[in-house]
Structures are given as C-alpha cells and as structure tokens.
Amino acid sequence: MSSLRAKISAVYLRALANGNVVFAPTTKRTVADSVTGLQFCVLIAPSLAKKPGGRASPLPTSAGAVAPARPNPFLPYDPALWVADILPGNTHVLLLNKFPVIADHVLVVTKGIIAGWYWLSLMVTIIAPDFMDQDEPMSLADVAATLVTLGAMDPADHALAFYNCGRESGSSQPHRHVQVFPNASPVPMDALIRSVPDHHLGMSVTTSMWNASIPDVQCKIDTIERLPFHHRLTRRRTDASESSDKEALELHAAYTGHLHALAAAIGFTPTTTGSVLPHNVLLTRDWMLVVPRSRSHSTTEPRIGLNAVAYAGSVLVTSEGAADGLVGRVGDVVCECAYPRV
Image (cartoon, rainbow, N blue to C red; front, top):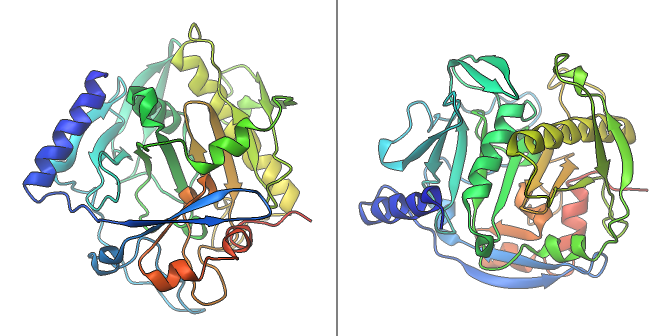
C-alpha cells in the first residue's frame, strides 16, 4: 500500500469517528440493460435526499429562472477533510468527500492560486481566479494530479476517477474538482471495454492548440459499437518504463482531441450559456472514456439525475421508487442524457 493510500484511509477513519464525514449507507440492486449487456449497479441511498444542499445533481430550473447560489465547500475547505497537497507546485489539494457512499472517496480539488511548476523541464505558470471553473475542460495539471491520486490506489481497489464538466454533466459545484474512489470489483463498464478488440483507430491530436511549446503526440482511440451514445475511448499505456509526466501529456492530448471530435460528430456549437461541450470523463488504471452530455436528468418520471459514474455502469438514487423506475429502461435513461448515435 502506498503512503498516500494509507493516509487516505487513516484520515477517513479519523474524520468518520469525529463526525466530519457523514457516511451514507446504501442498498444495492442490479439492473440489466439488454442493448449493451451491462449489468448496472443501482445504489439506493435515502439519507442523501436530506443532506445539506439537496441532491448531488438538482433538477434543472425553469426557463429564465435563476438557480440559488450554492455554498463553496472548498473555499475554505474543512481542515479535517484534508489529506494532502498534490504536485510540485501544490496546484491541487486532496480532500475527503464529506458525504460518501463508498469509504475513502476523495476529491482532487484545484486551488485558487498563482503557481509555477516544472513539467517536462518546462516552467508552466497557472494563473487562477478564486477557483478554477468546473464548466471548463480538465487542464494538464488536473490530469496529472488525477493520475497521482489514481496511481496511489492499490490495484485491488479497482479505483475510478471521474470528472463532471458543466451542469448537463451532473455537476452541481462550480469549483473544479475530480473525484476518485475505490471499488470492491471493477466497474461494470470495464468488462465491456475489455471485450472489445484492441484495434485502435489512429488519431493525431494537435497538442499545440493548447500549448505551442509542446510537440504533437500520436494518440490512439477506440469506440465501442455496443454503446448507443457518442463517446471516445483511450486505452492507457501499460509500459511501466513510461514516465507519468509523459502519460499525463498524452492523455490530456487525447482528451482534448476527443472533445473536438465529439463536438464535430454531434454538431455542437457554443451557446450563450456555455462555450464548452458538457461532458463526463472516466479514468481507471486501464482506460479513459469521454462522454458528451445533453442533459443532467431523464425527461420522464421518475426523473433520474446522472453524473459520470452512470457511464461506468452505476447509478445512485435516493429512493426505491427511483430504482424501480430504472428497471427495463436504464439503458434508455443513460442514452437519453448523452447524445444517441443514429
């Protein structure tokens, strides 16, 4: 066990005992989707309906209505939830999730600072406002900090990292953060991805679109035919000799390319409410999946809110009725909230 992984567990147990973390017990149901073959894990957590601030992904407001401002739990953050500062320039802080449904659930949170740090022998300067925006794509530093956290997890953790970009993605907090949590077994999507031949569709990503000082890299992508919604998949390197710096660079380049390709595929154009395609990012030790999002909730009752974890094959609800509403239609709900392929 890495020192950071051990520290996550130690801080979690202390915070739980002191009441700084409020664990939400769940019951689990398995709901099959006949289209993808995925066995969706539906977690039912009634106590989350009563947590401060309401549901993790509130229902959209009516046209013209202004959503109430939400308090920022990261400015300042609760010191009892602090685990570590991440990266040489301390651009990110690792915090516990205050309301987890899984033990050792952590958040990789951007700091609102001006920082200089070295990357591939280049000095990179980040000039941040009060905080980095969750409605913007992950930066290279975000990817690097996520890889540090994900790499600290044990292989037996089957850890998942995910990012919700934009309100339609299921995000409810504007302060940019990536979430990482361990699992008792691989997420359901993992089996589907492993069943796809590693054929790779070659794709050259122009990394100079975001940093002219770094040369272009060759990135490879896949799509999964059985997924009925638009997405892009990148398989991570398995060569242990490759530096984490280089992998972060390549993953960020692939991610940037995916967003441009997906925007073109679905005909997304910037609007007055946002210039970035809302999307989810899912990352494990083996792959990265990017899914563009059209809405945060299903349109039929009961309205189910989805964040990135739904596209790993797991849905969190707060009532048995909501879980019942997913039987026979979980695949339709997930597809509806993305962009169906035609």
